[in-house]
Length: 267
Length: 210
Image (tube, rainbow over all chains, first blue to last red; front, side, top):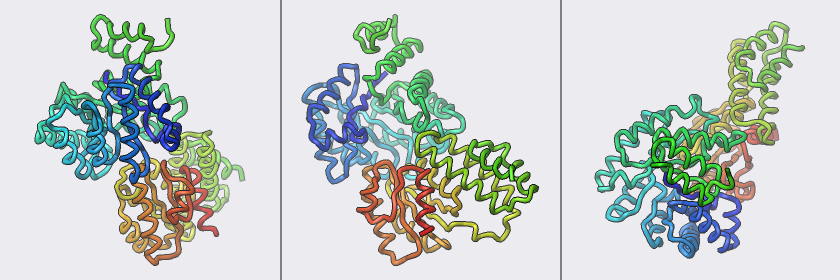
């Protein structure tokens, strides 16, 4: 399971405060602790006014690279910002994200084509967030056409099928699970990703919904997630699920994760 | 009049299957259609309040609105010619560059439940499209603009200012969305701000009662 550590995001009040007060240690701690918890990418999202977004991204990226070599996921709704920010990274990371909206893909794909940069792609286009599985797969097909055009191997892409909030969806996540399975069937080496907490928005006891979602999505083929790697219970569940679906020979990763204390103090 | 109280309680509880029958009972008992409608509007007011305080969750708001909608269907033939029952038209949309709509849809639902006629322009709506909609619709009393991304805040500002500069009158402008604050709303020239769907409906009623 590819873990994209989500903690450095200006949408989180404590991070917004650190950005406003230039609390460098706060950001460095978040980078360090996420790396130590096993994150494969550290997501960096400024979530500030567009006039100061680029300088904030630079400040954040510099701080992360001060303390860790874990690759960075540059995160912005603006493709222009992503394209600029990736130049600040010492090693190839992940662009978070493109979609079929506007010119995002045509801006980003050529920039990353001859590099090792990976890229998250959301299944939405200029008509909005898809309401059906069929529409999601249509957007997926369009994205893969572009990937072929720019020669980007599927293994470098993380497809986010845009999970609806459970509280407003009528059939649970069954449609999304079908979409995930279909995506993996068409391109076995592609990655499927998503946020683990959008699903439970505006329900009580959110953690149960988030965790059950991750297990179900993983069994359908999700192999990448934007989560809080410091959440030990969730990490334990992810490692256990991976072993259960046959992705962890002799349960070595699971046992290793336990010994490293990634799951917290358990028996 | 016990039945009308049952209608209110069951809308609050989201009892979609029971409300139509209870509305009919209330009519049979002699309650006026307008009074029954008001009872349902009051029920949604309670629901909105409880949602704002975190006591109720989105699904409970949705089924309450559904229950009210079922009740309104029963009332319709008895409210013929009562266009004045509407508090006015509310134009709502998510601003240009932003595709998020779930919050906006909840606000639209709650404002409609409060007694407005809602015209939902959808997502990624340009400032000029808002202005066109105000011109094209009757009795526009409220325009509501939503944005979730911090990067579309400039579009929110432009939308509010374009609407205000259009020369059109007779309505108030309300804004909302995760990155929006009361201070930001004031700074861009909006008349009001609400943090969630429940308080948006309350604010909407306040704005047209001035």
